[in-house]
Image (tube, rainbow, N blue to C red; front, top):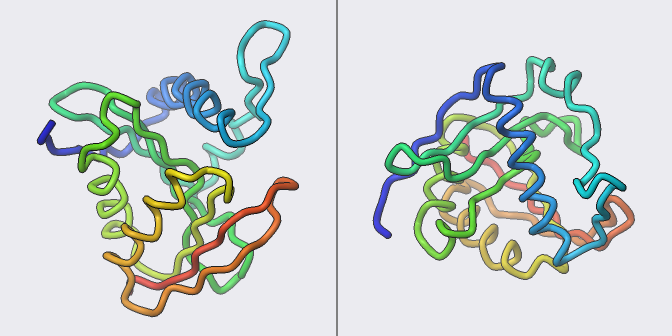
Length: 164
């Protein structure tokens, strides 16, 4: 598949779609860490209304050839207060993985949000451990600082860099 990913600013009408896609995000995440179903058979999402209403949260729908392919969210939920951006969520549907779609999405996010970044993934998530260092290295204009931390009670890899 050699298509172009379109990163589209999400509108309030798109947010229920993103929350639906978060079920698949959690399903994929459950391979690497414990994510449990609720009694209704769905993953229990934390309420997102306040998150979406925050002016520093930027949600995007991703389309490939007019087909929904994923979503991404950039926010300012960072550890270091001097940091500008964090990738809150990043999801690509399985049928688009192994293509350039995810790298295109990341590049577009970085191009739209210049500054200092913190990006983390659970260390057990091996595909993320291959993906993020590669795309960050392509975007960074400063050395990338990598550290091991604990986030949500799990070993986590944190990348800090700038793309000013």
